[in-house]
Length: 177
Image (cartoon, rainbow, N blue to C red; front, side, top):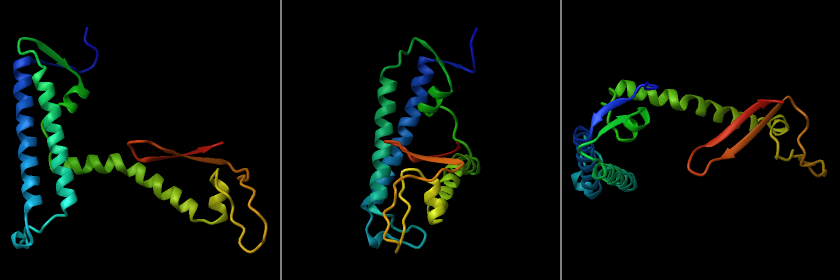
């Protein structure tokens, strides 16, 4: 019995699909390299110059994907059959691209909650003493009183913690105590 949706693809077909993606990334990298080499004389109203660092980063990203997919392709056994799950298909970029309107909608759905939490945390921080009372590990400022902040947050119904992930966005967790 097969659990979940898994696609069965021959090694030969898998290599062919990876070759197509590799060529796509090579074309994209070449385009970004060309864009990076443009001068102000090449600029038009329809084709303005893009910042060099953006072009360089995009070129590097596409060259890296070319290397990754080439490595995978070079280790595919042509005579074997592969059973691929969703993660395999996504990593190998083997599914057809979504139309632009769906891709934008998917991006907005993935980022909507994170942006809302970030805005909420910033709003709480900017609320002065109230914001500091809700945030542990923050000292409550006492301007002009001459007293030192205690460093301890007052008891509230909420606990807000921040996690700084190494290779990802900052995570802000708001929980009821």
